[in-house]
Image 1: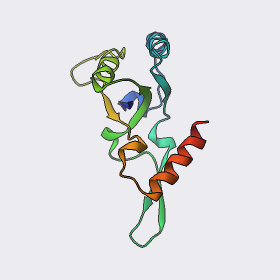
Image 2: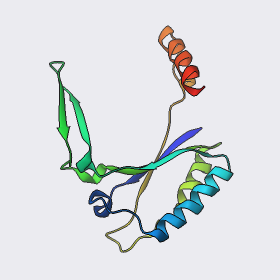
Image 3: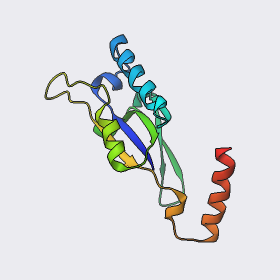
Length: 140
C-alpha cells in the first residue's frame, strides 16, 4: 500500500523560510529510518505558493493561469513523503514519528496522510489495461 504524507504549510514555509539545521538533522534521521525500513519511495519540500501557479480549467474549455501566492493558504502543501507500507496502521505509525514539535497551540504542525490508488482497484476496462501498460513503462 502506498501513502502520501502531506505536510501542511505554515507562515514560515509560506514566507520561504528554510528549516533550522536542527530540524534538518532530525528529518535526516527520520528519512534514513524510513529508507532503511524500505518504506521510502520519494520525499521533498516545496517552494512557497508565491513561486507557484494554478491552472483553472473553465467550463468553456479554456485554461486560466493563476499566479501565487494564493489567498486560501490554510490548505497548501509545504512538502511530502511518499511511502510504501503493508497497512494503514503502519502508515499511521510512521506519520506519528515525524519529528515535528508544536511551538504553541496556534503553531501545531499537521501532516495529512492519504492512500494512493493502485490501478488494480479500478474495474476492468480497456482504459485500465492501457493505464497498466503505461505504469509498467513508467516504473522501469
